Each structure stands twice: as C-alpha cells, then as structure tokens.
Image 1 (cartoon, one colour):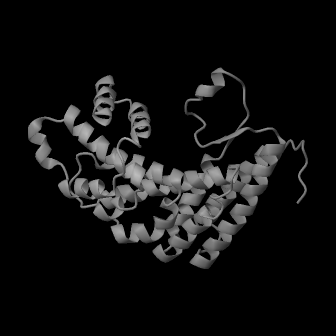
Image 2 (cartoon, rainbow, N blue to C red):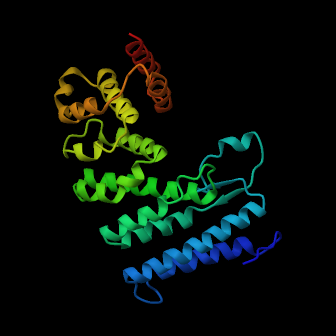
Image 3 (cartoon, rainbow, N blue to C red):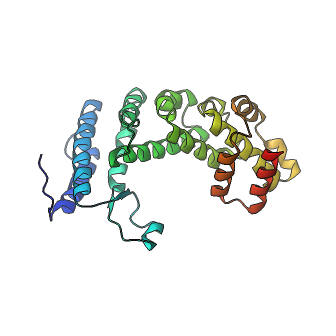
Length: 264
C-alpha cells in the first residue's frame, strides 16, 4: 500500500482504526474465539506497521504512550511525537483474552524482531508491551492469582533479552522489598548474573538504611541465598550497580554506602 507524504486525514484515520479495534475486542460486532483473536492481532500488526512507516514519512521522531506525562527533552528542542498508548492497550487486551498456551506464542511474536541491530518504532513498541505485561503478571503472582511456573513458561524467552531482563529486575526491586507472603524463588532465577548482583545489593542496602534492626527478621533469606548463588563479581559490576542506585534516587547515603562497600 503506497502512502502519501502529505496525508491530512492520516491521524484521524489512526484514531478511527484504534476505536474500531477496541470495539471488536469488546465483541460489539461478533463473538471472539482464539482463532479470531489471532486474526485481529495480525490485522493490527499490519495497520500499526503502516502507521509507523507513515509517522517516519511525516517526520515523527519518537513514540510515546502517555499524552499527558512529562516531556523533559522538549525543553531543548521541538520534536514530533507519535502517541501509541491506545494501541498498547489493545495489545494488552489481546493478551488477556488468550489461554496461557496461546499467551506464550503471543509473547514469542512480540519478541521475534528484538535482535535487530537498529531499533525501529515497532520493536520499541513491542518491548513496552512486554514490560507492561511482566509488571502486571508479577503483581498477580504476589497477589496469589498467578502461578510462577505459568509465568516462566510464558515469559522465559522474552526475559533472556538483556533490556527486558533489566526491566524485570527493576520490577522485582519495586515489588519484593519487604515482601515475604509469597515465595518467588522460581521467578528470581530468571535474572541474569549482573541483574541478580544488583538486586542482592539493593535489598541489603535497603534494609541497612531504611529498616530498623528488628525488621531484619522479615527479610526473605531463601531469596537472598538464591541471589547470592546467581550473583557475579561485585567489583566488575560496581559501575552498573552505582548507576542503578543513583537512578533509584534513594538518598546520598545509599550511594556512598554502596560505593564504599564495593571498593573495599
């Protein structure tokens, strides 16, 4: 399908496409079985890729998911942003409608172009969708609504990707500190060596700085033992760990504490 560089109604058409796909997923026109859901997904992929191609032709430089979030780099220059938050919501709805067996295939479809040397809009978009689904499913595990073994079957391949593994580590950092209601050793094992090293350091640092001594009895020792088995060389990973600690913006004391510990 040939696209014109100047297409006045393009954005309007994009919004209409999203609206119609949302109505289809809400079964306003017909009942969806898994075969039909896959047809909707493949149709959506074609539409979205055409829209990304058109966005490039129109001079859009970034894709974003929140129209109302902060735009820090806009202080430096004016850039054209293509918002795809509604498209992302459609992809998440499709995932939720599938059985676990089909969810595994779905995630594989989203990861199949991760290994391109140069990221394109669609690859970045797929990564974002997977990140949202990982966050959602980890929360379900901690709430006792999802089995770890099912999560592993669905996401094991995707989490092997370095950027996804790092995001997964960040999710675990936010979710599991001080949480001991559910044993999550199985999903901890999906972390690579570098991220396991960071998570171990972060948990020890968090309890050392923010918890009273009597609260140490609530720390998950089995999880720490597993992270210790998985961890790598502290000195080799020092730069990465310090960078991540600073991004957490805990406090200056935390950064000094870690820097001293790693250098000693």
